[in-house]
Length: 144
Image (cartoon, rainbow, N blue to C red; front, side, top):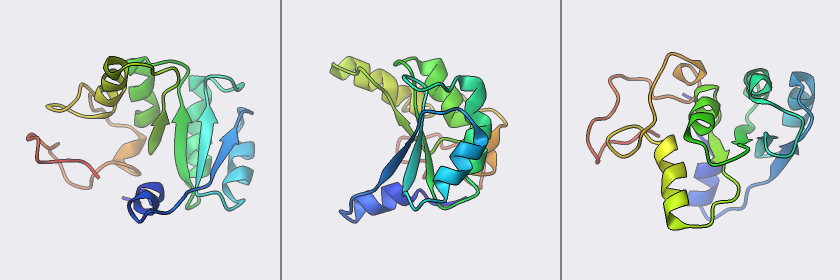
């Protein structure tokens, strides 16, 4: 599993650069991923990308050390879980205005018992998921 460089930088008190992808194409994502950004965000809220574009774009980004991030269009658990299943290392959720909305977004990113995300055999099994199974079953266990 490749480490999440942004998390490492933040833990060290460093700033991270984030590029933005508004054009939905794997080639654009690959070119941008090679420009030196720490992370690159696929914008599903205001860009031209749709969920069907996310997989190829994240695959292109993942050829590099750039961290793949997805900005979902809305605080919808299904969209958040799908973006993570496709290989996003981070999710940006727009229009979160209350603690309850924030809790809903976080729950969509975490597996039970601390969240509601389900697991399935997809891209993170080889890129962003832990290397050992089964999933953690206690609150003290966590995914990287």
